[in-house]
Image (cartoon, rainbow, N blue to C red; front, top):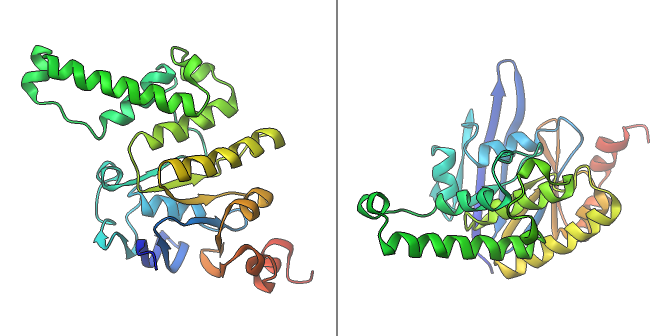
Length: 256
């Protein structure tokens, strides 16, 4: 059996008098592709923020490969192997497409101060490797010909792809995708579904995604977790979740 890559234990998140997530526990196995769904305001992005260190949980803990990470800063968690995209795209808009990805590679690189100050051959060799790796990623995402374009000038779908490429440049073990298909038309969504499948295999990724497009979730995910008012109400295969009475009530109302 695959080992646990990520484990959340009794996560709770309070914002003053509001409890956004309540005693949430789950595991994600290495290699899984898991969906996290629920009505608006169910606490899904709050979960992502706790997993990535943006929020420190009010209670509970997060373990990556049995190492406690919930007390770490976001950049350290990224270096440990958790990368994410955002519901609202967060690119470096005035930097080039290429530089957006190169910056992410630099988050995992270190240069001896001597090499950086005196621009030694070793410095340029590493910079060349980063450039080549960034261009390879842009090629996978169909953005190589846009490398010199400012990120803010891309189409919406291209921005989404660039954000995923930038996340992959950190060499993650676990990739968190927050509504990757938001704002996309059906053709773009279908292309994204194929792309996620491709990068999962190519980069040996474990993926957790939030998504409101149920056709994408049911087609793509092997397991689905459902939140409602911050409480986990279902955790199973797409068929099990689709038939779950509590899930139906959460989405459609108790009288349906």
